[in-house]
Image (cartoon, rainbow, N blue to C red; front, side, top):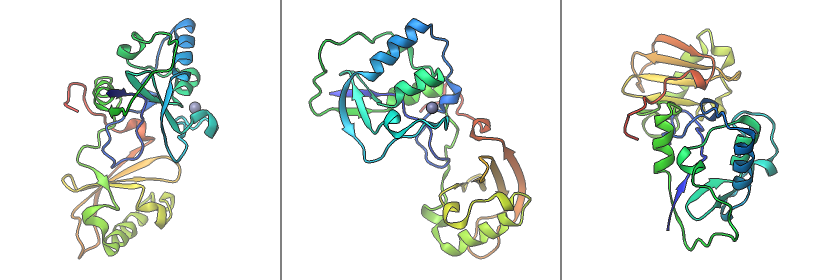
Length: 232
Ligand SMILES: [Zn+2]
């Protein structure tokens, strides 16, 4: 049985999951519609239990228990148990395809050995213009920039810029930097939630990267998004 997964969110620049930012999906549900949706999302059969709790992307301070660590299903769709929170607390919009098919269930869905697909959710999210465009980007701690010396040279160059004092400590740094080796750019998450994109002359093991231009983004919400109509 193939379940359509919904309700997964963008996590880290450089991780090419094509998940959306919930801040860009605002709903105008009526109170009745919303209550019905929240009730439905709170029911469902538990299918997958993960090791860690999810966290609210609006950073509202919701508890671990509220965000949950399991997935729920109705036998057609599957969603994280924290999805109800996004609808109730942040008026996040879900696909019409899902909302229009929900129906009260009298008994728990039987889901023998389900498999899950993100395909619908990702395509829908791109059509909404809600997915940050990190095609071609990767995290700094993967692949070719993995050499410690290169990382340190890049870090040294960035620390010398106007944003240097807001750069995360070194350990966090390698998990908060995405690089695009085609466009020769790197994106750094600062300690105050801003992002800075540096274009460098060359990524090289043998030289200190020369920063040729800098763009600042107030938050990840300002980053370019995958245009609607693009293939997922
Ligand atoms: Zn929240």
